[in-house]
Each structure stands twice: as C-alpha cells, then as structure tokens.
Length: 238
Image 1 (spheres, rainbow, N blue to C red):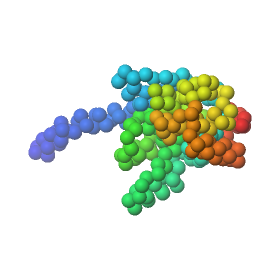
Image 2 (tube, one colour; image 1 turned 90 degrees about the vertical axis):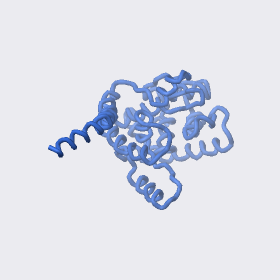
Image 3 (cartoon, helix red, strand yellow; image 1 turned 30 degrees about the vertical axis):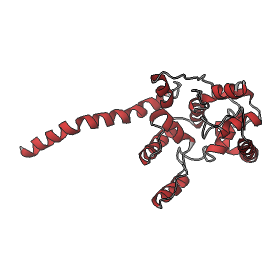
Image 4 (cartoon, rainbow, N blue to C red; image 1 turned 180 degrees about the vertical axis):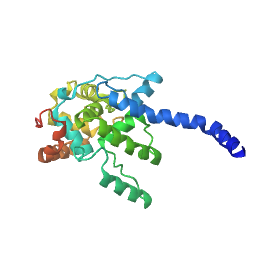
C-alpha cells in the first residue's frame, strides 16, 4: 500500500512534465510526414509573427531555383549532404572530441540538422539543442527525400535583416531578381550571407564576401557532382 501511494504521488508530480515531453516529441513525428506535401514555416518566422515583426517569404518550388545556388549551398554548407543520412557522423564525432577537450565548437551542423533546428527547436546554441538536432535530422532524412529537404531549407533559411526568409525574398532584396535567374556571382554571394544574414549584405558585398564567393564557385565547378541528389533529372545545369 505504501509503495502504491508513493507511485501515485510520483505520478502526480511527473504527470505534467511527462505529458509536455510527449507532446514535444509528437510534434515533429506528426508534422514531418505532412511536410512531404505541406510547405512549413519555421520557428524564427513564428517568433516574428507573434511579436508583430514583418515576415517576407514567397515559397518557390525547387525546380524554380537556380542549380548554381543549390550546388553552392551544398558545397559551402554541407559537402556530404547527398551521402549522409541527415548527420555527418565523422564531423559530429570530431565536434564531440573538441567539446570534451574544452575547445571551441565549429558547428558540424548539416543542412538537415539546420532544417530540424529551424522547424522544431530554438536558435540559441547549446549542447541540449545540438543533442536534439541529431535524432530529428535522422528522422527527417528517413521520411523526406533529399530534394524536399533542400527545397524546405531554401524556403525557410533567413536571408535578410528585415525578416526575409527563403531564397525568393533574399534574391529580391539583394539583387531584385528571381531565384531561377541567378548567375554565378549572385548565387555565390547569396550563399556567403547565410552564416550571418543580419550583417552580411550580398547586394553590397565586402571584399571578404567576394573572395569567399569565388572559392565557392571554384568548389562547385570542380565538385558539382556531389550535389546531384537535388537535381531534377540527375544532372545540374551549372
């Protein structure tokens, strides 16, 4: 009887935390399959909506986005995107070793992990968030094809300081053009803005951004075959 009373007391204490945890786990489990056909919005977009700040986003199908941009994003942000299952285990292992050694983190976030973070988590870096990104990215990669993951990424990534989300808004703000009309210069400069779209302005690039854009173009021209998983027919028009 005493044991039963203790168990009931524990359940009363833990019931709400367990229920909240179950809901938080269920959200990505349920929503991810829906994102096969439904175009999602991100947590940063929701935050701006809630706080009354502007959000500029026009969804573009992946076929209406320059292959130069898609390949540049992959070769710049996640060179193994077409090969891994959502998580680059080698890079993650190195990151864990650096953390255990007390060294500064370098990221190790794949494009799929960035999608997981933007759809379901928060932006402030922490060990907890990184630990949650891993299973979420593995699940997203299991459920969604690479082309759809890339399409979602390119439409939810923040691309400007005034609430520009997605490549359509980013390309329009920086260059006044549609994302299917990007040449090498505009495509690679837009990619250089991704690490810090609040400060980096591809329409008014610094010398450092121009230099990095040139490096990205060189990588894509040499290793563009690594990005063919996002091509419509297995061949990128570079």
